[in-house]
Structures are given as structure tokens and as C-alpha cells.
Image 1: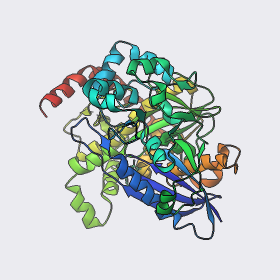
Image 2: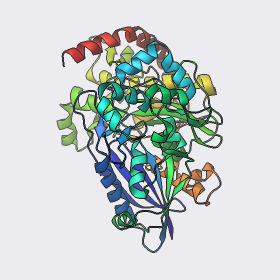
Image 3: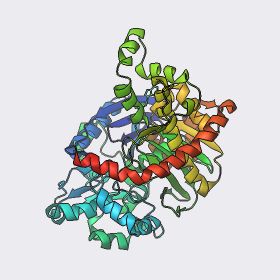
Image 4: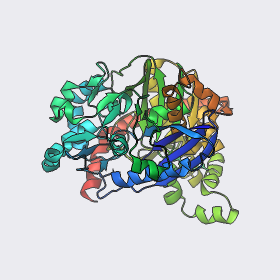
Length: 508
Ligand code: ADP
């Protein structure tokens, strides 16, 4: 039998899935690692700990490939990370992840003076401290010594692949997540290079997402259990690959994911720039561009509700022998659609799309004595979906009404939450049973790279059964009345977010 491995290097763990060429799963590994948060704004990871996690994940699944050969290993990786390397390719920094907020002031300044929007229009990267271009500006100011010592600037995947092959390569989609790549010329962006004071010989060589790295170092072949001849297919961003793994590959097919964070994305056939800079845009393959918006506040908000508002319910759930999330969604289901007018802005972790404001803070608005804890739980779930819906509205300005919505993520374990998505978006929502969609997307790119498939449509064969949730029209009146209030309130609260965030920073 012939196998392909899809590996997804995420923020909390690296997952690897062993597939046969028909998409059947034969092995799965998940290796966790910690986020290093020495200050509230810092979110770093140790590149060597992640390197070891990838070796262990690959070794775990390659063992399961009995009676056959592994044709390739395809990569999906978290976006927006920055890592410095010295002349000997040794790290000069930790991996500064997408969640690191230390470039906040630099990004806010560029947003205020209009240079952020100009940079977005060249690179497709919205103005936000997650962008490596902003992290470089911050590092040059805050740590000039590290900036000087650094010979190469890369992201996590480029470093990992360097360790495996001794080659510094970067695919176009990952390069687009840096803010240093011009999506119109498909090359490093001269103005961004000038701005950050770096040169193109400090950056990896650009390649297509189907590019194969060959000549795996023998010691690593032994450790991973792979043949030294096994090619690694460079793959793309985790966002693009989960879109592909969900099967949302055609015009008007929109993917909504709600895991810890969330996103709304779709493919278009040419670059589309949002005049207001709210949605990112980057190339994945010839004629396949992705546009969309990532949100910080997905399932992590529900986790906060569970652990803080609903700590006493834990004992009840244990007594009933059910998952606490299931108990909370049962409570939420006892309250009418719209939570009797209680609104929740879910910005517990600042927000990216659609408001791109790291200072944004969460709020309940509209509480009365009539509201109960069940209302607060439901309002939180609805608030997460309202926020994603406002991202969808921004996307609609570019693509028109979606033809189909596909969804995945931890939220899909809850029937109530799946239905909420259909009701608030007023669209049928298809939930495929596909598992680890990022790895499946990577495996699909490998199929093309290895000549087993001619285009992305092959993924539809691998996805398995899909369940469709129809919107419940009886909820429309409530949501149609509340969504505009939710949006106007966001606009009104926005002017105070910086003040409250400054207060919190001063008093932490
Ligand atoms: P990650 O983004 O780390 O891959 P997941 O996709 O597993 O995370 O999503 C985790 C989130 O899914 C949790 O924070 C929680 O909000 C949500 N979740 C998990 N189980 C349930 C459940 N039974 N009902 C509703 N939501 C759930």
C-alpha cells in the first residue's frame, strides 16, 4: 500500500495523520508543547521543542505504515511566526508566534498614519502586531543587539525544514503571512524590506506550495522512521489547508472554523483587496487565492465561560456523568434565540477580524434582573457567532452571498452551536465528518505534487459523510433585530477599548 503523511504544526500541538492514497486513515499522533508567556503580551515557543515534537509525531505514524511505502510528508503550519537565525542557522530568538502582542504600538502607529493600509494593499496582510513585518520593526527598536546578530529571518516551518534538509525555502502562502511579500509582483516587497532594514538575502527562497524538498538527513530519517529518499512537500498555511480539507474549494463556498480561535475564509481566482483593510488575501496555488478573516475569540471564550462563570456546574456535570460543555449547551438551549436581548461582545483576547483591535475587550450589554446564568451562556455562544457573521458580511462585499457554508472545529461537537451558526448566518451549514482538516488539506496538496491528482477537487473523495443543518426560520426575527444592535454597539464601545486596556496594563 502507498501512504502519505499530513503534518500540521499548530500553536498548541503538532498533529500527524497517516493516510493511504485513497484518504483512509491508518495512524494519528498529537504532540503537545507549551506556549511561553513571560509577560501578558508575550507568546513565544521553543523552536527545538517543536522540532522534537515533529520528529516524534512522524515517528509515531510512520510505524503504522506496514507493508507499503510512504510517498511523501506534506506540511501545514501556523502562520505569522518570526524566528531569527545567526550565520550558522542557530536561533537568535524563540519562535515569536501570531499571538504575541509586543509589536502593538508599532502596528497602531502605522495604522494611525495610513502606512498600515498601504502595506496591506501591497501585501494582503491587515495591520496587526501578529505580522512579522511589525515584529521586525519592534525588535529593531526594543532589541537592537538581537536584530544585529541575526543573519536570516524566517518563520517556524522554514526553520524546521532547514533542520530536516539544510535548505531555506518558503512557500508563497507562508511568505504572504509576513507582510514582507508583495502579492501583486509575487516577490519580496521592496518597500517592506526598506521599512524593516533587511535585505532579500536574509529571507528564504520562494517556492510553490507543491515544492518537494529532497535528501532528508540520514540521522533524521532514522529518528522519524522515514526513508532518506522520502520527499517533504512544503505545503501551505494551516488556514488555507483547513479550507481545502473542509472541501470549500469552489467559488462561493465559505469555510467557517471555530476551534480555540476561529475564521471565515473562501477561495477566489484572483487577488481581492478590501478597501477598508479588514480581510487578508494571499495566493495558495495558480488561480487559487484565499481571502478571509481570523478571529481570536472562538471556543476559547466558551472555555472561559465554563471555567469562570460556570465553575459550580462542573460538579453537576460530573454527577450526571456528562461533559461540562454539554451541560452548558443544554442550559443555553433552555433560553430563546437572542437570549432575551442580552448581547455579548466576545473580545476576551483583543480581536483580529473584523475590527483588528488588540485593545478590544469583552462585554455583556443589556442585562436585566430577568436574565439568568443560562442567558449568559447562550449570549456568549451567540456573541462568538455574531462576530464571525460580521466577518462574513465584510467578505460578502467582495464575493457576494455565499453559495454554501462548510464548518468544522471543536464547536461542531455541540448540536446547539451548529444550529446557531445556520440560524445567524441564515444559510444551510454543512459539517463534514473529516478529521484533522489541516492534515487532510496538506495530504491533498501532496497528491497534486506527487502527480496522483490534477487539482484540489480530489479532496471531495476523501471527506466522507457531510451533515447539513438547515436554518430555523422562526429565529430570524430575533437575530435580524439583534445583529445590527450588536454591530452598532461595537462601533460605540471601540472608542473606549484603548482606555480600558491602558488602565488594565497600568494596574496589572
Ligand atoms: P483547537 O483550536 O485547539 O484545535 P478544538 O477544535 O478542539 O481546539 O476546539 C476546542 C473548543 O471547542 C473548546 O474551547 C470549546 O469551546 C469547544 N468544545 C469542545 N467540546 C465541546 C462540546 N461538547 N460542546 C461545545 N463546544 C465544545
